[in-house]
Length: 433
Image (tube, rainbow, N blue to C red; front, side, top):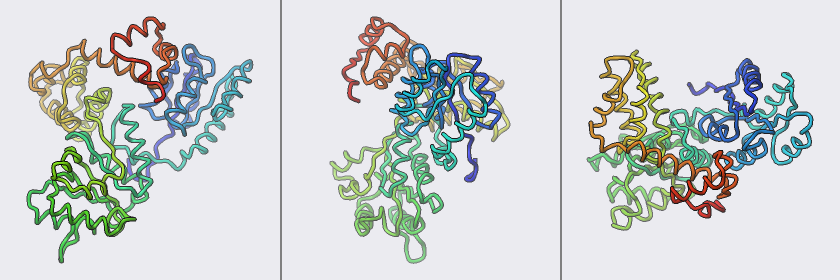
């Protein structure tokens, strides 16, 4: 996708009538919309985190979670998301109530094509989609709710001039987040300059950052743009002092020459500050907003998505089209990834190069992981980890309301309480969140 390409508007359809879903999907796709259809409110909530719709069209009357319940959940998680309610003639008063509760509008069944398209166009126009462009985050591949929270934080801070500190383990994508913030900001058409603070030569490091008589440094070349200080913890103390002084000279700007500063760090800067290895004044200048990128072990639902992305990327580069066998994907999804996304990318690249057939089997994936089963969680452990995460997410969505959470999970209250006890989860912990 180039800088001027606008993606299609995404519409999420929710109805327990498969026939109506197919009809509306065909109508909307014919108008060049990207459509995803789900038959329940719970499935729609899960899809929304991955699909990131610009508009939701949902039936009012559905089992488990009705349209009004879905509306409330969507509003709490994505406040600006527009929702259109579908209703039968006998439930129009309920649909009116839904619009009073925040729905954009409602359509009566059978749905008139022209009215549908008119409502959709109005909702997208009011939502500002015609001016939106997700190019800013295109390099970050995720369906993780946790990552979506970090991306929301990144998008909000991009609209400000605040300095940003991005922390996280090696290989989690801190540099991609920094670039995404730059692309989402008003500085997007100005330089994005990276200075690697891990250079061994201190004199060269000083030139890279501050320049000299014959060469401009990062602070100068990033004028009106963004300067990324990669792995700022490695910057020598003497240069830390000089950088802190440069930032102090322009208190209303992130750095001299109207440069926005973003710094990344793998190490704990507060611990380094306590030990005297990092300057306190510089830390507080850089830590305007802190974004911590989760490791891959906390977003395992992204592993199959990332694997597919890397395979497609390599197919374009090499012409070798490969897929993983299901048991190989399961192996990767439960493996340890100390090197995070960078390690996963490297492994996929290696597997594609070594595979002798179009299908990459589990044996080859295991060899690339080191051939040690101890690196993997057992199936039962992985299942329990997923179950606990799933239950915690439902409790968080419902604010600790067990009855509502049990309905979302399609379990009775007694069974749901047993699941909570087994996984040592207490509903009170989620109330008021």
